[in-house]
Image (cartoon, rainbow, N blue to C red; front, side, top):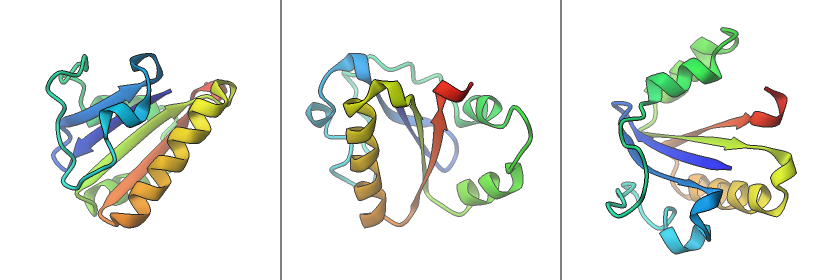
Length: 115
């Protein structure tokens, strides 16, 4: 389970993955604008454009996804696998609630179990 949060220019702002521990501890979903967690062990060289290459490997829905990114201030990419069970369900529920209260965020879900 990974969460990557990007600004409109495609720079990584924040992220989380299951091995970091309890998602609540990082308070990723407590503010907009999304804040950078400086003590986080995240590789901030990751870019949205590189992630899109992984997501759009088959070219499907490319225009629709790019439109969503271009019309929102933030993009969240969620890489999950249903076998992660509670962790995936909990993170997806938290993200959905966060995005519902902050309409200027688009979310792209990537089920890695299907890759």
